[in-house]
Length: 245
Image (cartoon, rainbow, N blue to C red):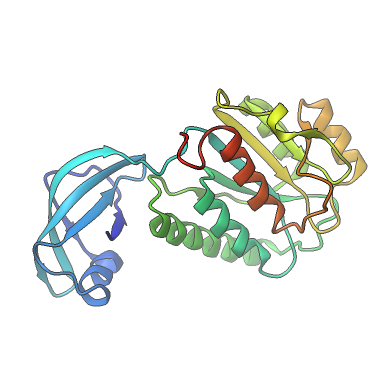
């Protein structure tokens, strides 16, 4: 069933206009009587029925609401060091599909990619569009935010202030993930390094601020593979993957 995210409160009747209206009427060729799902972006889904279509606008009657079943019970923030080329596009898409709550690009010591401010602003806009498309495709109840890139030291402070489990996935070794998160975990911050990994001084800074080095096993994963593996493992360990939530 097609899903549309809306800004503002959702009442008894809704007009789909703009890009959403064009997509419903022109691309999907939806007609009166067909069912759609609307979402407020805060975890609530609304079941709706198309009453009429006109031009690029669809009028929808709201039939009921329920908490979005696709949202995990754990709030996961991904602090991803900027990789080379367009690898971040894939990271955003897959992280949203796996249930991430927000994505924070990080400039760490060994990042090769260091775009200028204007270029980074354009990239961030693109990443947010990718996140929105992925959220719609996989039926999420929120639109995960892709934030502005920040330095590693500030990212560490944010994770410390957020509380919950704070994990640094480190190729130099760490504790097995099941020993760090479980069904009772409700908030996780996870750090993934760039192609060259984290610098020793970054690992020390992270540990001084309460981050726990964690391992995904003996194989060294690519920077675009590690967040996918880490998020899938976190969702499994917390009971949010495989129908156990």
